[in-house]
Image 1 (cartoon, rainbow, N blue to C red):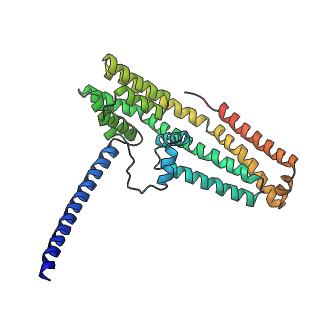
Image 2: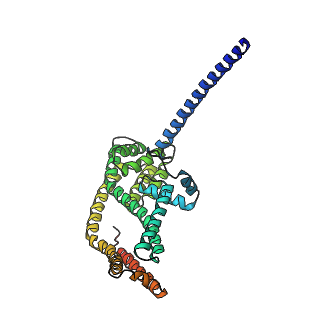
Image 3: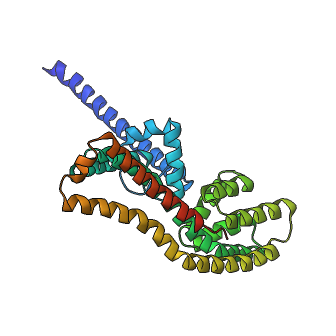
Length: 312
């Protein structure tokens, strides 16, 4: 019995020592992991917004494909708190929901058409969010130019001026300039960082601002006077764009009202005579008539939008 006591104590001490070492290694690993996450999230290389990401496996699989990379770029330009996997799942769920609703409310023929409309609507939603964010950024361009000009006039470097503008301005300008400042902090050149900004939010005004900053940085010209003149020009363009948008608001509403009236007429017919759409789409001629009618409504929508589109 005495002979077993000493080995038992020794084994217990070794187990306790191994447990202490294991806890120390685990705590050190967690600290290193958190430090890495903080560093990468600060540079914008990973997204850490405090929300647990869903469909991580699907997201990793999508990032390997060109379609997934395209979705990631569009989502990054919209500023939405979504991953490519989440958007893909939500899009598929929406398509299936529209398919089921259209098949049950109208007729089974309208199910696939509603599914295609759902795919188009998902892509249109991303484009609309990107355009909306770009418009908001364009409206802040005069303030961006003013802040950078004041900081440069005070003797600060252009990189420091951009970082200061990122801290002072609200979203989306503050968020986008922060990405530029983070890219500069990890060694990216000013030309590359600003060019990526112009690619994320394409607009003529932003291209002019980026070109002015890049040329001034390369040639060492007077950044302050260039930005002062650019601020005045951007303010005038901002007012002109607002007036044009106000003048064309009625035409834009007409573009959306025309297809809405057609869809409402179909629902009204099916409500007055239940099963009318099912009977009409039961033959090939009826299906062709529906497809042609929907195609004409789509052409009308596109033509009205093209006519009302004025580049300022």
